[in-house]
Image 1 (cartoon, rainbow, N blue to C red):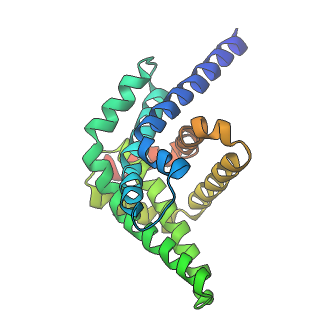
Image 2 (image 1 turned 180 degrees about the horizontal axis):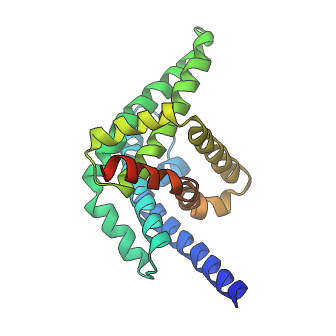
Length: 220
């Protein structure tokens, strides 16, 4: 009976992640449409920038919905997702904004360095900062989902965790690499399950850390 229940729970979670993925595709429609159909140039750049900016609310909604479904049984996944997306639209954009500008600057620097062949010695440093910013953003999403905090405090605490939890930070790097490989080798499946699955694994791996944070910093 326990094996049967485990199978049912696993099946329900797979379906839930798929539904969340569909919702994420809908809220990321502009960016997906641009990537698939519109060539990046000076004219279309502004639309790409808008599409990338809207990644913030989508990621916020993914993490919040996944966290809720991990802790509560509710089949209204679509309603939950869009409720989080609309209600947290402003705050999730504000959370994403510093990383958005930093990642744009770093990617532009990497592009021009690789194009011109000058300053190639800076590429490892730029790549390192890019990776660290992505790790910090994942921490921020987890904190944003779990705790009620000001955006500036979330970002500050995410940087604290980045430096003071090297093993956990390494775990995020491994998860990001796994996500990349998932998209690279199983693109048709990854487009539906990639980020929801990444979010679920993040919460599962960081469950103890969240309890520690709550006990040490929230309850005192």
